[in-house]
Image (tube, rainbow, N blue to C red):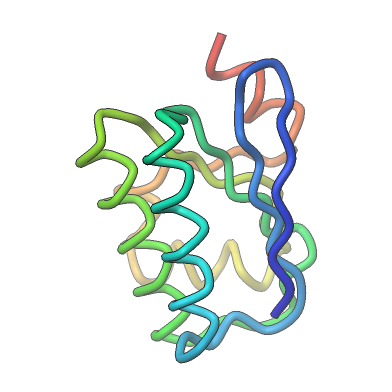
Length: 112
């Protein structure tokens, strides 16, 4: 999995690409999030448009990310899941936990 971050209108966008399977990827994402918290970044979008597969460890990774950001007084939203990943989020009922937007543009506008 590759992780990249960028800023757009005061919102931090974390792009995940590849397979989200936890393990070392979870540690890398956690490091990115803690750096954002230190910089007082409170608006975060995780763009998962480039994610091909995700397992339970990957889902746990996203839940941990949400907890980290919310504990710091911020909010995190998920953008652009593929149909496959969206169905995984529905089956696991994580659509009740995460605010999920069909596109990155809609996720960004939801913060304004």
